[in-house]
Amino acid sequence: MGRSPERAEKAIAELGGEAVYAPGDVTQPDDVAKAVAVAGRMGRMGIVVNCAGLITAGGVLSRGGPLPLSEFERTVRVNLVGTFNVVRLAAEAMADKPPLCGDRGVVICTSSIAAQDGQRGQAAYAAAKAGIAGMTLPLARDLARHAIRVVTVAPGLFATPMIDDVPDAVRSELVAGTPHPGRLGRPSEFASLVEHIVSNPMLNGEVIRLDGAARLGFS
Picture (cartoon, rainbow, N blue to C red):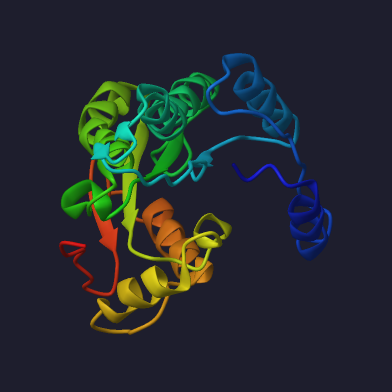
């Protein structure tokens, strides 16, 4: 779930030391509260980008029987409950700050194109990501009185550690379904959209697909 000390140290070095690493589990309130406090000690926390999550696959009914309920629950807990946990605690930290350029804060969540066209074996993942997309507008409306914006990005297939374990054949099939550009998305392209969301005050309560016109077919 993105808690690799090695990757964190590399990122901090690339940023010239202008960052800190606060490992934790997004589903645990104490861990997230600690991370928020660490961020607050670095200065004003005005932007939160929710990227924590996991990808799972498993048919509802297979030769071994029905999908274990624990697998469904874990996927939803990490991806959906974990996202909400970060949003609520980050928003609390932002709400008492003076507005800056009209906003006290901007919260960006990460859904997936699977929220709209999930494939076979993605019931748990698609449900969790659809939940993130579905709560975006009510979150934005709830936090509007605090001048906090909420926007969700729904990426297609991106070159991140999350897909390292996806079989090459499956990955090639997914990439082939991306009309243009016909490749994996780059983390820098996700970051570019995040930057635009932060700088554009009219983006609020919206779910933005970032997928090269990809649509997940029956697979």
